Length: 88
Image 1 (tube, helix red, strand yellow):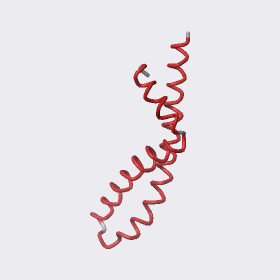
Image 2: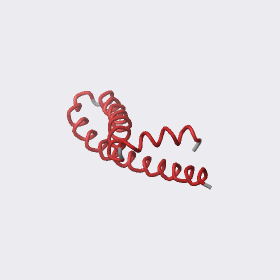
Image 3: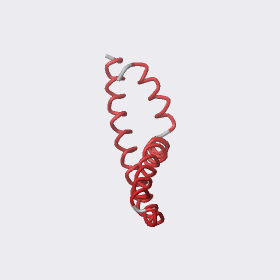
Image 4: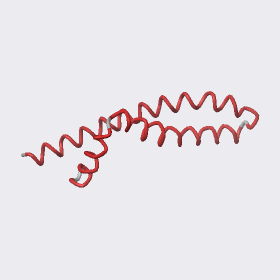
């Protein structure tokens, strides 16, 4: 992680872990993936749109939570390494 990235991450982490998980994991990544898969399902089976939505929305909310959780912890690990390097 570069020092500029560490500064930006410090701002993001001040907003909190759950804010990041919901914004980046669920709303950004999860909704995009959900839209892609609903679109693909709808193209193949247009008469099953509702079942596609009902199946994909909970799936991608959970996947987005996991994505946000793991990216938070991965970035936090990199940040702590960078801060440790700067203090030495």
